[in-house]
Amino acid sequence: MLSIALLLSLVGIALGFDSCQRIAIAVSSATDVYYPGSSSYVADNEHYAISSSQASKCSVEPGSAEDVGIVLGILGETKTAFGVKGGGHATNPGFSSTIGVQIAMTRFKEVTYDAATQTAVIGAGNIWDDVYEVLDAQGVNVLGGRVIGIGVAGFTLGGGYSWLSNQYGLAIDNVVAYELVVPNGTVVTVTEGNDPDLFFSLKGGYNNYGIITRFTLKTYPQGAVWGGLSSYNASYISAFNAATVKFCSEVTDPKAGMLIVYGYISGEVLHIVYLGTQIFYDGPTPPNGIFDDFLAIPALEQDVTTRSFFDLINSTSASINLSAGYRTVYNEIPTLNYSEANIEGIVDEVNFWGRTLSAHGAFVVSYALEPFLPSLLAHASAGSSAYPGSRKQVVLPTNVNLQWPSESEDSVFHDAARRTAQKLGVKGVPIYPNYAIYGTPVVDMYGEEGLGRMEAARERVDPDGVMFLTGGFKV
Ligand SMILES: Cc1cc2nc3c(=O)[nH]c(=O)nc-3n(C[C@H](O)[C@H](O)[C@H](O)COP(=O)(O)OP(=O)(O)OC[C@H]3O[C@@H](n4cnc5c(N)ncnc54)[C@H](O)[C@@H]3O)c2cc1C
Ligand SMILES: *[C@@H]1O[C@H](CO)[C@@H](O)[C@H](O)[C@H]1NC(C)=O
Ligand SMILES: *[C@@H]1O[C@H](CO)[C@@H](O)[C@H](O)[C@H]1NC(C)=O
Ligand SMILES: *[C@@H]1O[C@H](CO)[C@@H](O)[C@H](O)[C@H]1NC(C)=O
Ligand SMILES: *[C@@H]1O[C@H](CO)[C@@H](O)[C@H](O)[C@H]1NC(C)=O
Ligand SMILES: *[C@@H]1O[C@H](CO)[C@@H](O)[C@H](O)[C@H]1NC(C)=O
Image (cartoon, rainbow, N blue to C red):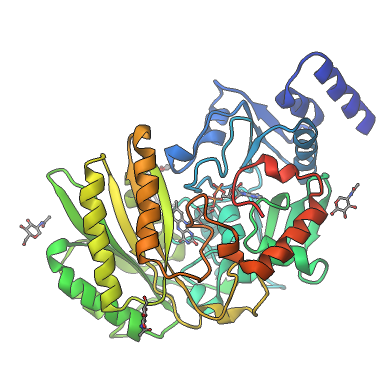
C-alpha cells in the first residue's frame, strides 16, 4: 500500500502535479479534495470574519485520522503552506486560513456520551451548538462556547471560557484525552498519564503539535437553564453601571454568569452607545437578588426565560448573524476587577474609539465585560495547563471587538485594538490566546517556564517544524 502511494506521488511530482493532487491520490475514499468552483471549497475556506478567509489552492476534508496523517506527510515533504480550520472563528488573519492547502475538519462530527465514565468524545469538526443539541437530549453538558457558531477545536485548544466555568473551570481543565495526529503521521492518544508534557502543552498550544481529531471531555448533568439576551437604551447607563459593579463584586453563586456589553454600533439613524447583557443561571429560575438590578432597567429588547442550554445558545443567532460578513479584530484587555473606576475607564474608551472609528466606517466597536469568580482557576492544579501561565490570580478576559467593511482600513482598526488594550489592560498577567491579537508574544500567555516545556514538547513531536507551515501563535 505504502509503496503504491509513494509511487503515485512520485508520478505526481514528475507530471508537475501540486500538493493538492498528490493528496487526492494518496488518501482513502473517506477524504475529498475540492477546488475553486465547488461549494465545498467555498464552505471550507469560509470564516466567521471575512478578514480571516483566504482563497486556498484547494481544500481537503479528511475523513479519518489516518488520512490526516497522510495529508500532513505530503505537506511537510513538499513544504506547502496550509491552514487548519475547526469552527473558523479565529479573528486573527491567517490563523486558520491559507493560500496553500486548506484543511477543514468538518467530517469529524462525532458526539458520543459515555455514561459510565461521565465523558463525551467530541470530533474536532464540531461547532458547540451541535454538541449541545446532542448532549442536551441525554441530560448532560460539556464546557463550550457561550454564543452560536464557535468551533470546539480552537476554543478548547486555546482555553475556553464557558457558562459553566465558575463551576468547573476552563474548557482545558475538563479535557481527559486528545486524539492527535503528529506531523510524522502517527495517530496518538494523549493523556495526563501517558505524556504529561504534551498533555500540558495541548492545553493552550493550538496547532503547534499536529492536528487534533477528537477530544474526550468531562460531562456534567444538565437540566433547564434560565437566561438570554437583553439590550438597553444608553440613557440608562448610570443604573446599568451600578448593576454591573454590584453583580461583579457581590455575586458569589457559581451557577450565575453574565456577559456585559458596552458598544458603539452604527444604527439606522445615528451612532448610539449600546448596552447589552447575556444572562445565565444554571437552573430553571435564579434566586432573588442576583439579576434584579438589571431586570429593573427597562429593556429595548429582552429574551430572558427558562429554556434548554441549547436554546440559550441558539437564541444568540440573530444578534451574532447581524455581524457576520464584516472584517473583524478581537483583542483582550486583561482586567482584575470591574470596579466603578475601571468601568468608567472602559466607557470612556468606548466613546473615544466609537467616535474615532466611525470616521473610518466602523460597524461595531464593542467591549464585553466577562465577570468570573475568584475561584475560577482553582478547579485545576497549578502547572496543569500551558494557559494560563499562572493560576495565582484570576484575570478577567475583557474582550474588545471591532468590525468594519473596508480592507483599506484594516491597519486603523488593528492599531486601535492594540492601543485600547495597552491603555486599559493590566500588565504582567497571562493574556488569553483566544482573544489576543496576532503579534502578541506567546510568553505573555504561557509564561517562561510553561513556554520552555511547550518548546521541548514541540521539538520532540515535530522535529522537522512541519507545523510552522500553518498560521497561529507559534511556540
Ligand atoms: C462570536 C465569537 C464568540 C466567542 N465566544 C467565546 C467564548 O464564549 N469563550 C471563549 O473562550 N472564547 C470565545 N471566542 C473565541 C474563540 O474561542 C476562538 O476564536 C477559538 O479559537 C475559535 O475556535 P474555532 O475552532 O472556531 O476557530 P478556528 O479559526 O477554526 O481555529 C482557531 C485556531 O485553532 C487551530 N485549530 C483549529 N482546529 C484545529 C485542530 N483540529 N487541530 C489543531 N489546531 C486546530 C487553528 O489552526 C487556528 O489557529 C469567541 C469568538 C467569536 C468570534
Ligand atoms: C433612548 O432614550 C432617549 C432619551 O430618553 C430617547 O430620546 C430615545 O428615543 C431612546 N431611544 C430608543 C431607541 O428608545
Ligand atoms: C435556532 O434559532 C433560529 C433563529 O431564532 C430558529 O429559526 C431555529 O428554529 C432554532 N433552532 C432550533 C433547533 O431550535
Ligand atoms: C446565521 O448564519 C449561519 C452561517 O452563515 C447560518 O447557517 C444561519 O442560518 C444564520 N442564522 C440566521 C438566524 O440567520
Ligand atoms: C481593581 O483593579 C485595579 C487595577 O485595575 C486595582 O488598582 C484595584 O486595587 C482593584 N480593586 C479591588 C477592590 O481589587
Ligand atoms: C512519530 O512521532 C511519535 C511522537 O513523537 C513517535 O512516538 C513515533 O516514534 C514517530 N514515528 C516515526 C515512524 O518516526
